[in-house]
Image 1 (tube, rainbow, N blue to C red):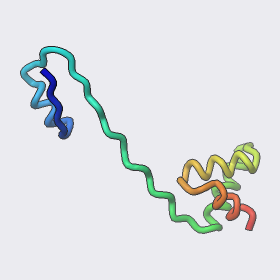
Image 2: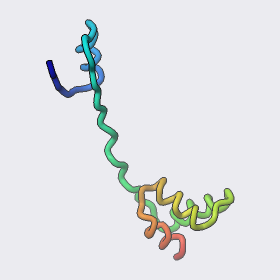
Image 3: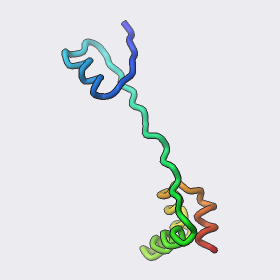
Image 4: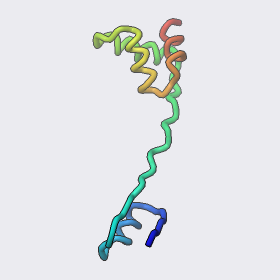
Length: 82
């Protein structure tokens, strides 16, 4: 018998409380993508400078800041060089 449904983990717990026979597959939806940070050029430059101060190259610092803020690397690069 094949059965499918959706719901919260709490609902799943209630459904399985009396035991489950057979095989169960649970698919968990990931979190929605994070919205890019709304930072100005000065804040982005500061974040890049902070990364450089830890010993990273400017290129690596820009890549790190882009990944952490969700902004395109090009935008962080442009802000860091203004």
